[in-house]
Amino acid sequence: MSTALDLVSVTAGYGDNPIVREFSTTLDTGTITTLIGGNGAGKSTLLRAIYGTNRFFSGEIVFKGERVERLPPWERLKRGVGFVPQGRCNFPAMSVEENLKMGCYTLTGGKHEPAIARVIGLFPMLRQKWLTEAGNLSGGEQQILEMAMVLLLEPSLLLLDEPSLGLSPRMQGDVFTTVQQIAATGVTVLVVEQNVRGALLISDRALVMEQGRKFMEGPAAEVRTDPRIRQAYLGGNIQQSAA
Image 1 (cartoon, rainbow, N blue to C red):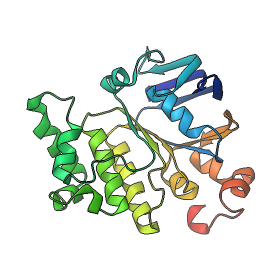
Image 2 (tube, rainbow, N blue to C red; image 1 turned 90 degrees about the horizontal axis):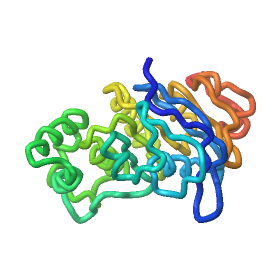
Image 3 (cartoon, rainbow, N blue to C red; image 1 turned 30 degrees about the vertical axis):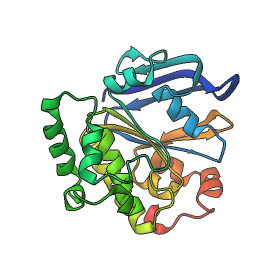
Image 4 (spheres, helix red, strand yellow; image 1 turned 135 degrees about the horizontal axis):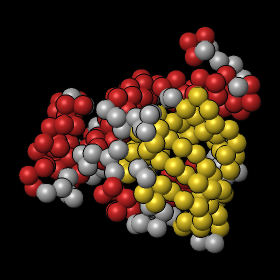
Protein backbone atom coordinates (compact mmCIF):
# COMPACT_ATOMS: atom_id res chain seq x y z
CA MET A 1 0.00 0.00 0.00
CA SER A 2 1.35 3.43 -0.94
CA THR A 3 1.80 6.34 1.46
CA ALA A 4 -0.46 9.36 1.10
CA LEU A 5 0.80 11.55 3.95
CA ASP A 6 3.81 11.62 6.25
CA LEU A 7 3.90 13.93 9.25
CA VAL A 8 7.36 14.21 10.79
CA SER A 9 7.69 15.98 14.16
CA VAL A 10 5.07 18.57 13.21
CA THR A 11 4.76 21.52 15.57
CA ALA A 12 2.03 24.06 14.74
CA GLY A 13 -0.36 26.51 16.36
CA TYR A 14 -1.37 30.16 16.37
CA GLY A 15 0.68 33.33 16.86
CA ASP A 16 3.57 32.44 19.13
CA ASN A 17 1.71 29.55 20.74
CA PRO A 18 2.42 25.99 19.54
CA ILE A 19 -0.58 23.72 20.10
CA VAL A 20 0.49 20.58 18.24
CA ARG A 21 3.95 19.44 19.28
CA GLU A 22 6.30 17.05 17.49
CA PHE A 23 3.47 15.02 15.97
CA SER A 24 4.46 12.19 13.62
CA THR A 25 2.36 9.64 11.75
CA THR A 26 1.84 8.07 8.33
CA LEU A 27 -1.45 7.67 6.44
CA ASP A 28 -1.77 4.98 3.79
CA THR A 29 -3.61 5.65 0.56
CA GLY A 30 -7.34 4.91 0.57
CA THR A 31 -7.65 4.43 4.33
CA ILE A 32 -9.82 6.12 6.94
CA THR A 33 -8.09 7.36 10.10
CA THR A 34 -9.95 8.82 13.06
CA LEU A 35 -8.21 11.42 15.21
CA ILE A 36 -9.36 11.25 18.84
CA GLY A 37 -8.75 13.57 21.76
CA GLY A 38 -10.40 15.72 24.35
CA ASN A 39 -11.36 19.36 23.88
CA GLY A 40 -8.22 21.42 23.33
CA ALA A 41 -6.06 18.41 22.52
CA GLY A 42 -5.03 19.94 19.18
CA LYS A 43 -7.06 17.86 16.73
CA SER A 44 -8.45 20.71 14.63
CA THR A 45 -5.12 22.49 14.82
CA LEU A 46 -3.44 19.46 13.28
CA LEU A 47 -5.93 19.38 10.40
CA ARG A 48 -5.37 23.09 9.78
CA ALA A 49 -1.61 22.56 9.84
CA ILE A 50 -1.91 19.90 7.14
CA TYR A 51 -4.04 22.26 5.04
CA GLY A 52 -1.88 25.29 5.81
CA THR A 53 -4.26 27.67 7.58
CA ASN A 54 -2.36 28.21 10.82
CA ARG A 55 1.23 28.86 11.87
CA PHE A 56 3.74 26.11 11.13
CA PHE A 57 6.71 26.08 13.50
CA SER A 58 8.77 23.03 12.56
CA GLY A 59 8.77 19.51 11.15
CA GLU A 60 7.79 18.10 7.77
CA ILE A 61 4.48 17.53 5.99
CA VAL A 62 5.11 15.20 3.08
CA PHE A 63 2.16 14.72 0.74
CA LYS A 64 2.57 12.09 -1.97
CA GLY A 65 6.36 12.37 -1.67
CA GLU A 66 6.51 16.19 -1.78
CA ARG A 67 7.18 18.46 1.18
CA VAL A 68 4.29 20.94 1.35
CA GLU A 69 4.59 22.53 4.80
CA ARG A 70 5.67 25.90 3.35
CA LEU A 71 3.05 25.98 0.59
CA PRO A 72 -0.09 28.13 0.96
CA PRO A 73 -3.46 26.36 1.23
CA TRP A 74 -4.43 26.93 -2.40
CA GLU A 75 -1.26 25.20 -3.59
CA ARG A 76 -1.98 22.24 -1.33
CA LEU A 77 -5.53 22.17 -2.71
CA LYS A 78 -4.15 22.04 -6.24
CA ARG A 79 -2.00 19.06 -5.25
CA GLY A 80 -5.00 17.19 -3.87
CA VAL A 81 -5.51 18.15 -0.22
CA GLY A 82 -9.20 18.84 0.52
CA PHE A 83 -10.55 20.23 3.79
CA VAL A 84 -14.11 20.39 5.15
CA PRO A 85 -13.88 22.48 8.33
CA GLN A 86 -16.18 22.25 11.33
CA GLY A 87 -19.49 24.06 11.01
CA ARG A 88 -21.58 24.95 7.99
CA CYS A 89 -19.51 26.10 5.02
CA ASN A 90 -21.99 26.23 2.15
CA PHE A 91 -23.93 29.11 0.59
CA PRO A 92 -27.28 28.78 2.43
CA ALA A 93 -29.33 31.09 0.18
CA MET A 94 -28.18 29.29 -2.98
CA SER A 95 -29.55 26.02 -4.35
CA VAL A 96 -27.71 22.71 -4.33
CA GLU A 97 -27.05 23.22 -8.03
CA GLU A 98 -25.58 26.69 -7.44
CA ASN A 99 -23.45 25.46 -4.54
CA LEU A 100 -21.95 22.73 -6.70
CA LYS A 101 -21.24 25.22 -9.48
CA MET A 102 -19.51 27.46 -6.94
CA GLY A 103 -17.45 24.47 -5.85
CA CYS A 104 -16.08 24.22 -9.39
CA TYR A 105 -14.57 27.72 -9.27
CA THR A 106 -10.98 26.55 -9.76
CA LEU A 107 -11.81 24.14 -12.59
CA THR A 108 -11.67 25.12 -16.24
CA GLY A 109 -15.09 25.42 -17.86
CA GLY A 110 -14.98 22.12 -19.70
CA LYS A 111 -14.48 20.22 -16.44
CA HIS A 112 -17.48 21.62 -14.56
CA GLU A 113 -20.21 19.33 -15.86
CA PRO A 114 -18.18 16.07 -15.61
CA ALA A 115 -17.15 16.97 -12.05
CA ILE A 116 -20.72 17.68 -10.99
CA ALA A 117 -21.96 14.49 -12.68
CA ARG A 118 -19.31 12.51 -10.80
CA VAL A 119 -20.32 13.73 -7.33
CA ILE A 120 -24.02 13.32 -8.11
CA GLY A 121 -23.26 9.74 -9.06
CA LEU A 122 -21.61 9.30 -5.67
CA PHE A 123 -24.39 11.11 -3.78
CA PRO A 124 -27.76 10.75 -5.65
CA MET A 125 -29.48 12.74 -2.89
CA LEU A 126 -27.99 15.88 -4.40
CA ARG A 127 -30.00 15.43 -7.60
CA GLN A 128 -33.19 14.96 -5.59
CA LYS A 129 -32.52 18.26 -3.79
CA TRP A 130 -31.20 20.03 -6.90
CA LEU A 131 -33.26 23.23 -6.60
CA THR A 132 -33.46 23.30 -2.80
CA GLU A 133 -31.64 26.09 -1.03
CA ALA A 134 -28.73 24.68 0.97
CA GLY A 135 -30.01 26.38 4.11
CA ASN A 136 -33.23 24.37 3.86
CA LEU A 137 -31.44 21.01 3.80
CA SER A 138 -31.16 18.93 6.93
CA GLY A 139 -27.86 19.12 8.81
CA GLY A 140 -26.74 15.78 7.40
CA GLU A 141 -27.68 16.74 3.87
CA GLN A 142 -25.72 19.97 4.22
CA GLN A 143 -22.69 18.03 5.43
CA ILE A 144 -22.90 15.72 2.42
CA LEU A 145 -23.22 18.74 0.11
CA GLU A 146 -20.13 20.32 1.65
CA MET A 147 -18.11 17.14 1.20
CA ALA A 148 -19.32 16.95 -2.39
CA MET A 149 -18.21 20.54 -3.02
CA VAL A 150 -14.68 19.64 -1.93
CA LEU A 151 -14.72 16.36 -3.88
CA LEU A 152 -15.47 18.27 -7.10
CA LEU A 153 -11.75 19.08 -7.18
CA GLU A 154 -10.83 15.38 -6.86
CA PRO A 155 -8.67 15.54 -3.74
CA SER A 156 -6.68 12.43 -2.90
CA LEU A 157 -6.58 13.42 0.79
CA LEU A 158 -9.74 14.60 2.55
CA LEU A 159 -9.60 16.26 5.98
CA LEU A 160 -12.92 16.27 7.85
CA ASP A 161 -13.44 18.21 11.08
CA GLU A 162 -16.43 16.97 13.11
CA PRO A 163 -18.66 15.99 10.15
CA SER A 164 -21.45 14.57 12.35
CA LEU A 165 -21.49 17.33 14.97
CA GLY A 166 -25.05 18.26 15.98
CA LEU A 167 -26.71 15.65 13.78
CA SER A 168 -29.31 13.08 14.76
CA PRO A 169 -28.12 9.48 15.13
CA ARG A 170 -29.71 8.58 11.78
CA MET A 171 -28.03 11.45 9.97
CA GLN A 172 -24.73 10.62 11.68
CA GLY A 173 -25.05 7.16 10.17
CA ASP A 174 -25.64 8.68 6.73
CA VAL A 175 -22.52 10.83 7.06
CA PHE A 176 -20.39 7.86 8.14
CA THR A 177 -21.69 5.85 5.17
CA THR A 178 -20.72 8.76 2.93
CA VAL A 179 -17.20 8.78 4.36
CA GLN A 180 -16.89 5.07 3.59
CA GLN A 181 -18.08 5.68 0.03
CA ILE A 182 -15.46 8.38 -0.41
CA ALA A 183 -12.65 6.16 0.86
CA ALA A 184 -13.82 3.34 -1.41
CA THR A 185 -12.93 5.55 -4.40
CA GLY A 186 -9.29 5.62 -3.25
CA VAL A 187 -9.37 8.88 -1.29
CA THR A 188 -7.43 8.93 1.99
CA VAL A 189 -9.55 10.32 4.84
CA LEU A 190 -8.41 11.85 8.12
CA VAL A 191 -11.40 12.67 10.32
CA VAL A 192 -11.82 14.41 13.66
CA GLU A 193 -15.08 13.18 15.12
CA GLN A 194 -16.95 13.64 18.41
CA ASN A 195 -18.86 10.39 17.84
CA VAL A 196 -15.81 8.30 18.62
CA ARG A 197 -17.64 4.98 18.62
CA GLY A 198 -19.22 5.54 15.20
CA ALA A 199 -16.02 6.86 13.65
CA LEU A 200 -13.87 4.00 14.92
CA LEU A 201 -16.29 1.45 13.51
CA ILE A 202 -15.69 2.72 9.95
CA SER A 203 -11.96 3.47 10.34
CA ASP A 204 -8.88 1.48 9.48
CA ARG A 205 -6.64 3.26 11.98
CA ALA A 206 -6.92 5.63 14.93
CA LEU A 207 -4.72 8.36 16.37
CA VAL A 208 -5.14 9.63 19.92
CA MET A 209 -3.91 13.10 20.94
CA GLU A 210 -3.35 14.47 24.42
CA GLN A 211 -2.14 18.02 25.03
CA GLY A 212 -0.98 18.42 21.44
CA ARG A 213 1.07 15.25 21.32
CA LYS A 214 0.42 11.77 19.98
CA PHE A 215 -0.61 9.52 22.82
CA MET A 216 -1.48 6.36 20.90
CA GLU A 217 -1.99 5.02 17.39
CA GLY A 218 -2.87 1.70 15.85
CA PRO A 219 -5.58 -0.27 14.07
CA ALA A 220 -8.99 1.18 14.91
CA ALA A 221 -10.27 -2.15 16.25
CA GLU A 222 -7.38 -2.34 18.73
CA VAL A 223 -7.62 1.26 19.86
CA ARG A 224 -11.38 0.83 20.29
CA THR A 225 -10.87 -1.98 22.81
CA ASP A 226 -8.03 -0.37 24.75
CA PRO A 227 -9.25 0.11 28.35
CA ARG A 228 -7.90 3.66 28.51
CA ILE A 229 -9.77 4.67 25.37
CA ARG A 230 -12.95 2.91 26.50
CA GLN A 231 -12.88 4.78 29.79
CA ALA A 232 -12.03 8.21 28.37
CA TYR A 233 -14.07 8.29 25.16
CA LEU A 234 -16.52 5.38 25.06
CA GLY A 235 -18.17 5.57 28.46
CA GLY A 236 -16.23 2.67 29.88
CA ASN A 237 -18.15 0.00 27.97
CA ILE A 238 -18.43 -1.11 24.38
CA GLN A 239 -21.67 -2.58 23.19
CA GLN A 240 -21.50 -5.99 21.60
CA SER A 241 -22.15 -4.51 18.13
CA ALA A 242 -19.01 -2.42 18.46
CA ALA A 243 -16.73 -5.21 19.64
